[in-house]
Length: 282
Image 1: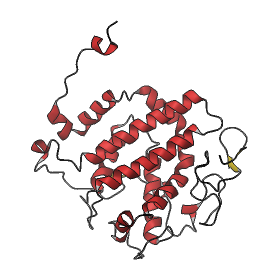
Image 2 (image 1 turned 180 degrees about the vertical axis):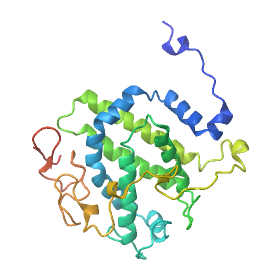
Image 3 (image 1 turned 90 degrees about the vertical axis):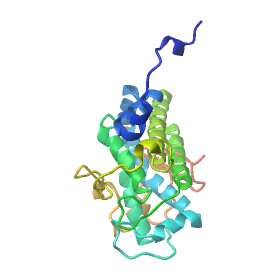
């Protein structure tokens, strides 16, 4: 029996368009990864579960970034948006870290919006651009090795948490995890396009026009402060997303609510449409 792929006509992809048209690039990635209606529906249906994880994911990511001097040093450079005080040796309670947590939380909330809209992918592309220092008053270039590792941590935490949900059907878990994985890998590509030299014969000298500040796209604010963590929020940044406990001494701070990802997680209550259940660490 002939493999199914041989029954399909070979598609032509214009190489130049992959480097000069974001829409063409995203369309190609959607086709190659079979990202379609079923993935969009899975993300829409799973958004409330993903959003419940966001505060914990943010804390876990920043714990990881602050474990290494090579990643922590990025937070001693002032960002364009931040004008507050800065600690020379940042920790999780440093003003600049609380500020960056706000943006990561809002960014992850953006991942729960509508991927059927081109604006969704335009913003993910802008996120990649901003990490190379383009469009910043205080240029900040994050080397790609740390970007890739950070995305891997986010995917790892979300995957374990969704698969560990006590009541979601396994087929729904799989659908959400697959759809999330595709989005994260497309985001990964929209980072690397700003770092690698592929296609530079088409992009050398390209005018990117006026670069809007972080959190804005087409004159609209796409990352809202209420979606993130406002400064001076009395340790909101370290609050457990389900129990509401706050502070770095909370036993559930930085813990995924659906899983025993931290050894000290015990009796954490998870709530969705049904009554609360007890989930113990494992």
